[in-house]
Image (cartoon, rainbow, N blue to C red; front, side, top):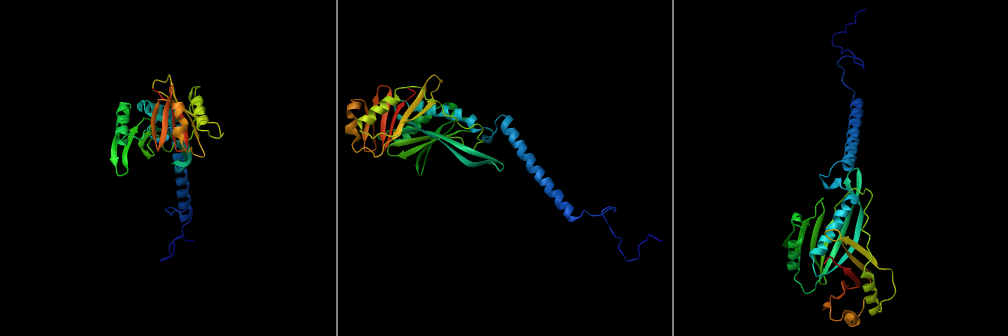
Length: 284
């Protein structure tokens, strides 16, 4: 029997036939496998790079690795503030951001507040910028919302400063979204006179008993000392703080304005702004 196909009849093709087209279902399966494999490979390479490689982008430094950079930057800001009244603000770690589509992350922010109601904010920020390390390339520009300080503390850590109202300037140090790693561990506050100065101010204000003060610390430049703040929030806010605190302040009052009150008690700066009562040892 002849194997030739009759004229006008197309020979059948099958899986084993020469020159057969790949069935659409098979093409789709291979495309899906290749796409998933590529995504998995990218995820593995990203994880290995974050774990092992030197940092070339922010995402290659975890919060655990960036934390000490942030802490040192806070100390530099306190030192640059000189004799002005300052207070450290609590660290904030915010989860929920994405480092990559496959990797969750978190951000870390620490801050310093400068309390100086009578000062010109732009002049204070410019003075700070001039005192910060040259490698930070700190500068101040004027925007529609007022003066803004901006600097690069290294390791992709951003420093910013702006007026915050009520006679305060707020300086912030931010990491941006990072892999969490082992997480951020704040510096342990060494023992100092801040807690006693804060307790004396609370007694003078007849403040009701409340939670223990929060103790915050940052290394001063050089690493041999710490800047430390003990802080509490008073509720209700004292009605006449200047009258109550005057005996403790004596002649060492730094400012007495509707926005707040501050004085020196030895080497500690005690300040009340709104309901926030702080006692701070600086890097002077």
